[in-house]
Length: 234
Length: 234
DNA sequence: ATTAACTGTGTCCCAGGGACACTGTTTCTT
DNA sequence: AAGAAACAGTGTCCCTGGGACACAGTTAAT
Image (tube, rainbow over all chains, first blue to last red; front, side, top):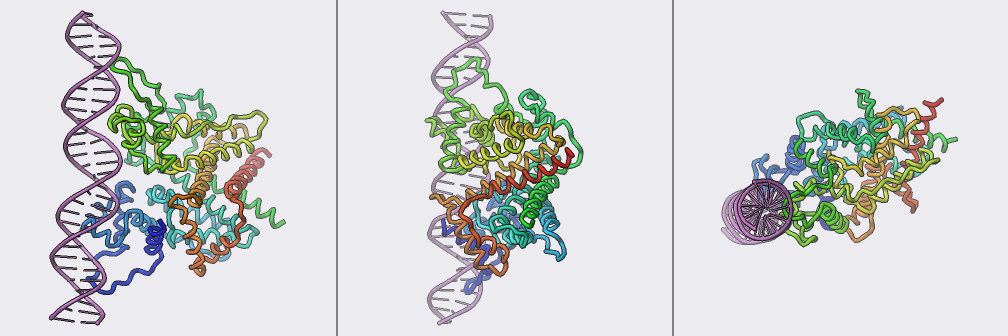
């Protein structure tokens, strides 16, 4: 397995390859990843197969294996291609504003590429861009009395929250996708069994139109963080 | 698609079926789900196939389709089977203690059945037990001045955090699984590119042995929540 | 000019999900 | 009691997807 991991590391971190003798490659990792992203954006990660990616590029399935060892690595490349740069660090902005900016941008990213939720489950090798996000968040927390592990944990905490929100946002999305009815199924279900889920039924009864889930959780986390930082400083 | 959703709802929520005429079923949804859980516990969700589940029960693959419409529904049943009951509500316990208990138990559950992380991505129909957890958390927040959506958002926030922790715990697990080396790969990677990830390198340098990620995030969330509750009350 | 390395392709294999027709069994109805 | 209807489990078939492998064509170094 360390073979495969090293293979993925080479693709994500290594130099853009250095061909020496034979014919020039007609494809590139970038084009392959972009094709995969296009399919995933349009039809979801499940629709991404070697065949379809190759077909979109007018190549044969097996030619992809000249560039990518397997599907896992292809997905890793797709993730790295879809993950944009984190918002730049602006001088004079406090940690709270920076973390808010990062979270918002991350949420936008997950809204644009919902399949990232599926592609980033389970243990995997992270690419430079992905690590860049982590760096950005950890850096924003520098110099406020938090230990190293605490800064890492905060990053995980924020990412987990945005993930959770994005996941339920996807389920509730009222577009033509097959999942549209899921909330329409769950709501009546709770009401139908209101005796078993009284608190839930009550909580779901009051609906303000706006979707403040992201901001609400974010504010709670940041409030809690602020309390800790103040306590450490004082 | 609402067909499939309704089918899943019938399996998860409907009565335990009502045979009328033909031969008695030799199998049951419970046994099938248990077999699937056993395989997933041992080899991961990816190893769960109709064949293996049927084989474990000494039946043919196709006989499973007499009970379950497809694999998605099988996984839903597995989830519902693996999800235990939430910790009971104890009178005299504050909301903070109750939420802590729920989070801890959820974390234990995910540690026992890591494949739940894979099985609960994406939109899906939730079963009674799963909804019971949500009910439990929302109920613990009753009567503290939070709106319905706010209580729901808090539940999502907590679940997202525990999920995130469980995910990184799985990646770091030092057992014989193939993912063991992932952290061993990521660490050196950060150090190797310490110039691009200075904050990250610094944060990863200081390692206290204990794994406090779960509690740290939980305390932050609860602190932030407490601040809101106090503000609302005052 | 020759050779070695490399690219893209066609063919093959296997595993997994699912459709379908078929046989056997049980219970309801007449 | 006897037929009929509904249901259980099976074997066979098809499709899709991932991947191995040998092959032919292409290019650069020697």
